[in-house]
Length: 415
Ligand code: LLP
Image (tube, rainbow, N blue to C red; front, side, top):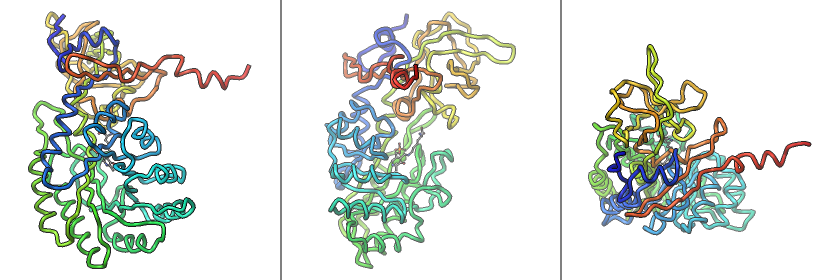
């Protein structure tokens, strides 16, 4: 067995033996490096890096970023509860999303979060009403839709007029005046988020320019903001031939625009998700069968679409390597598929691979939108998660058990 492929100082083969498969493995070092890259790029400009925990909401990952000084971008009461449970600070937490319920708003107000990123006029009214009932004033930013094409997969593009997110640029000033007139709100910022997995910086820079222009128009009307929040969206290389956008270049462009801005000293907020965790994670999966067909070959593995939904949902590409080498096997072209009863259950299609039953495969770039999007479809227990730090590996979520999956329904069974 080839024990050379490692996560930091621990071999993937050992991890698979010790914890079983499928297994998500994360590198502490890679998480830290990704966070520090933002800090370094934006140094000299007061910036709050709010990790978008939808990318990976494991409590140990949240705690790691909290210790590094991060704030958090959340999109549900559940995610706010995760931040608090992990020891993250409410006053560094922002709450985004188009459908905040009354209960979620009340929970966030009670917790004392930094800011509500409001996405519509009806949400402003609701927020004001809940804050009034609680005798509080809610800190508000309006999410403005800058109508910039992010050139990414349509399901993860969010900044166009046709998307459900944000308040249209044409309505923005009216929305700010409405917010300013509501007695239980106080305006602190402006935000946008145009899409995810962006490898080209120009749409992000264009969005920043448009948001700053609006900020200037607001200032002229006496609405002064403390921060501008540019959202997340920076992509990661999934394929060998892709390169990550240059954060330093992005930061320099943003700093220049801020410095040239007449509205005074605006603080910066960012909401990166994928770029902090994506390439820190690998999904380990074991080959169950190699099925040779007349038209197609299939490498059937023990991870499935319920563990990694991205290929089925967005035709996403994840690099897959054989940790055991598979060198005695002929190289074949195959689909790498899971046991779920759906034709869409594939992790990769038409890949050149050498593999035999029992081999360990490494599905790369699985630190973001993998475990956090996992489900129990086909009554498959959710996989375990492990965080490696140097030579040590720590279980940060045990593999779900059959009992855990069934017990709440068993309790509802009639005699
Ligand atoms: N802020 C807001 C308001 C967002 O909607 C998102 C992601 C982020 C920040 C973080 O974006 P990031 O830095 O990760 O690009 N499941 C999809 C990605 C959906 C992203 C949704 N919003 C995928 O697997 O590609």
